[in-house]
Image (cartoon, rainbow, N blue to C red):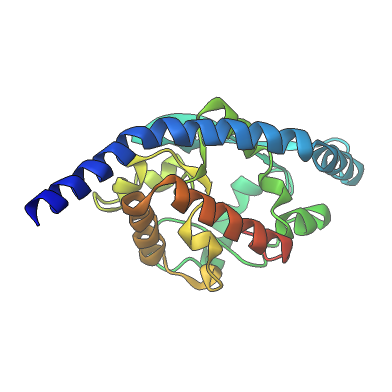
Length: 218
C-alpha cells in the first residue's frame, strides 16, 4: 500500500515537473495557429471599429498584473467609447460584481455598437493571443487584474498571482458566471491552480469555445 502511495506521489511530481514546459508549448502552438486562422476575422474587426470611429484607436491597451505581480501591457480590440476608464467613478454605483475590488456591468453604457457584437462572441479578446505568444499570458489561467484591483487584494486573493494569467478559466465556462460574487471567482481560480494539468487546460479550452460559439461571451 505504501509503495502504491509513493508511486502515485512520484507520478504526480513528474507531471507537475513536465507541465510548465508542455503548457508553454501548447500556448505557442495554439496561439500562433489561432492568430493565423483568425486573421481574416481580426482584420474585419479592425475595419468595423475604424468605420464606426475613424479617429479613435482600434486596440485598447492597459496595464495588467501577471504572474508574481509583474506588470505587462494587455491588449483588446476597443469595444468602448474613448475615455471609458475615466467614467468608472461616475458608474461605480452600477457595479454588479458583488464583493471585492472588481468592476463589472452587464449592460455597460460605455460599450459601442460594434463593441456589443464583438463582446458577444468574445472577438474583443483575440489580441490577447499576442500576449499568450509573448509569454505574458497563457490560454488558461486566472484572468489578469488591474493594478488598482490587486492593491486591494488580501493575502488569500493574491494567491491568484502565483500562476500566469489566462484568457479563460473555470468560471468563464459556467452558465452563472455573470452572477458569481468575487469570492466565488477567486475560489474557482484557486481550484484551477490546484487542478491544473494539460488535460484540464484542454477541457477548459473546449468548453470556452462552446460558450463563445453560442454567443454568450466569456
